[in-house]
Amino acid sequence: MEHKIFVPLKKFFSGVTMYRLMLYFLIILVATAVGLSVAGKLPYDPVSILVNVIYLCAVSYLSNKFFAKVFRTKENSESQFITALILSLIVGPVDPTSNILFLTFVAVIAQASKYLIAFRGRHILNPATAGVLATALILGKGASWWVGTLPMLPFVFLGGVIMIRQIRRFQLVLSFLGVYCGLLFIDSLLVGRGISVFDLLQNLILHSPLLFFSFVMLVEPLTSPTSNRPRIYYAALAAICLFSFQKWLNVPYSLELALVAGNIFFRILKPDLRMTMRLLKKEKLSNNIFSFLFEPQKKFDFIPGQFLEWTLSHEHADSRGIRRWFTISSSPTEEHIWLTTRFADKGSTFKQKLKNMTEGDEIIVSGLAGDFVLPKDLSRPMVFIAGGIGITPFRSMVKYLLDKDLTADIILLYSNRTAADAVFKEIFEEANNRFGLKTVYTVTDETPPGWQGRSGFIDQEFIKAEVPDYQKRLFYISGPEPMVESFEKMLGSMGVREENIERDYFPGYTDTQQPV
Image (cartoon, rainbow, N blue to C red; front, side, top):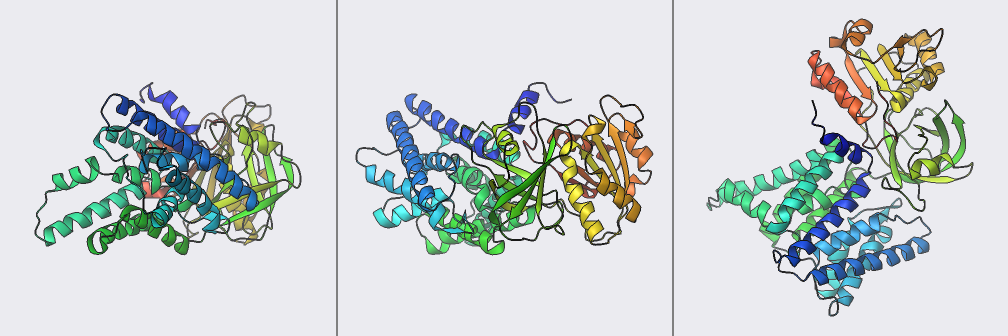
């Protein structure tokens, strides 16, 4: 059983977006650096650290507002401060009175890069890296990476692990560190230096900014891949570039240049989608579930089950910020884009803004991604398990199968608190008539009179009763993170192999978690 102390922590982290979590992480690092400097553990002036942070944040805020107005786009209130905090941890601490030009340049150029070095309205380079490199070229002064010191290591490591756990970037970070350390170790053997693994790791981890670079800058969501395999390629390329720059070119700012190479490679590998969509209408599907029909600027291709990052700027955003991931509930065969979500009585400011949208209002979408898609071989039998609003990717998949006149052996287990919460019944009924989709509805709260479905949670006995050949099937699980994790464990205990389980969830996906 999970220890009680972790329950409130998991609840907190599930309710905070990666951007806001990164903001908190960086603030904690700055506060820690000030505290360590006051205690004499870091050889820096704590006042200089604070003044650097305040000035960089102020210049970043003003310059970002200026560029957003010039380029007629909506500013992102979180990213400008994230960039400023990163800069404060890698370019200082400097005496602000004699380095005012340097601090101004690096902050302004970092913000400008988001607008000037962009593709389809989305910046290509990590802004902090762009600011440091351009300032070094102009003023001859760049990053010191002072955050990479031994006293800061425990805080960077602990916060970084929490970060990449929450945003699911373990593969990216481990691939980068593994490839880079592996190349260094092989090189030491080939040139006969014979450095031990322990000494190598000690130099790299304890006395360098490598962990901060990996946990904070390499994983930036807007300039790194969102799917697993591209992440590995991206991380490996950055590691190879870093090793090559240091060994053969012996150039300064090798960390920054390696990240630039990775950012550019990512854009070449997968040009990003970013566009504005206009609301055509919204429909109330149940007491607290609404669908929003959007018209994209132009039609784009996607795979049923994939998701988009939706950005809706609004004042006084809460800790969950101005961005969300939502699965596209429409099929690629449909002309417009459907977003379907649940609203709580006291939901986030994002959800409140979304719910209050009227016809003609606009929202920005980007970051099309997702591996939670139908198998290439549709002859393989499948089980879809949906908890509450987790039904959205299955609506997209089933609608696609219908419109393409395809068949598949699918059993859908669909759980809600109440019968009224079940949506998209018409599509699933049509699929039943067309290719035999079996839908099993269950409610976990009060069962209404005349209810024809099941009642109670989906457990092992439930699955065995409704899916007798479950060990031969491919399982797709969609819903809140705790639900997905519990089903993964349950299916594993039932003998379902890990490779036969596909999972789909996003941290902070809904304002309320739906039991199954």
